[in-house]
Length: 139
Image 1 (cartoon, rainbow, N blue to C red):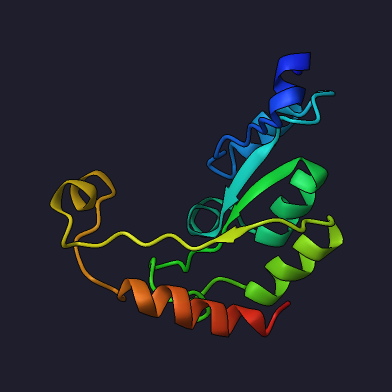
Image 2 (tube, one colour):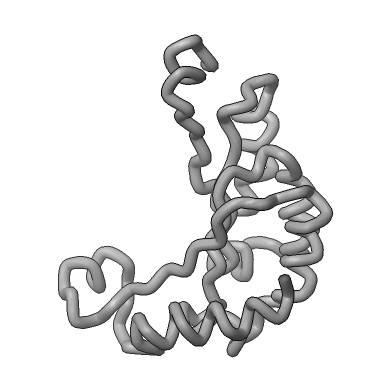
């Protein structure tokens, strides 16, 4: 619940909804609590949503955090995610916050095991620099 304490500390909650689950979680978490919303992640949306842009529109102002991740966890803008549609939807809902890239290196064995990363698709630098360059075209 929003309390004076949460307002004073500017805490925002945006649990990652596994996208199709976001259809359930958004009404529950967003019911009148401005600091509670959802996080969307294009890697998971690619698996679970038939229309990523519509999922973003559904989240609307309740979208608190956005992960821009390619369908194969490689360099954003080199795979199958419909970035133009996603960024158009982000613009439609007024999202003006962070777009975060995720990178799961195979050279960190514990992280690779926990994230089921079994091959190196791209380097951290390729994801960060290449992803920014490619996705900037949609801003």
